[in-house]
Length: 143
Image 1 (cartoon, helix red, strand yellow):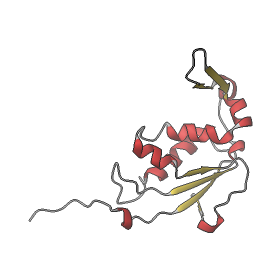
Image 2 (cartoon, rainbow, N blue to C red; image 1 turned 120 degrees about the vertical axis):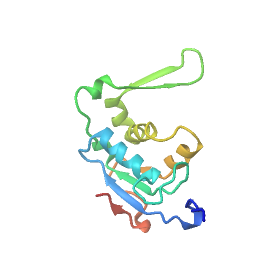
Image 3 (cartoon, rainbow, N blue to C red; image 1 turned 180 degrees about the horizontal axis):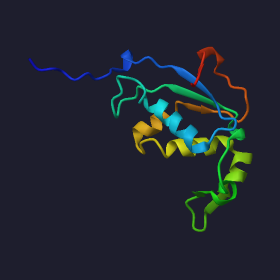
Image 4 (cartoon, rainbow, N blue to C red; image 1 turned 60 degrees about the vertical axis):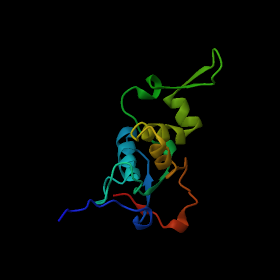
């Protein structure tokens, strides 16, 4: 008799909602924990390429911590697509203007860069302040 491999179906997956307070947390360590939950690596039925991960709500993104001189030395680049359209912004300015982009960029770097990763990134909700509109989902604090 041949043993069949278990493959999780879309209807069998139960998704949880987690809330993370980013106040004083290290950017890289926080991003790796979030990426792990989005991928579903903590679940026993984890299968690569199958979306079984949970939702993550991050609050207080503006109070994130980094070590060393990263606030001034780390630069984020984006390009408009036109000649000479390269824009750059330091981590300090990015945290002041768009704190959600800092966490989203760090988590995206730890997810697969394909359709699956883009789908997973949509389950990440980031808010600069302490308020969020996901109280109805009853998010549990991340241990």
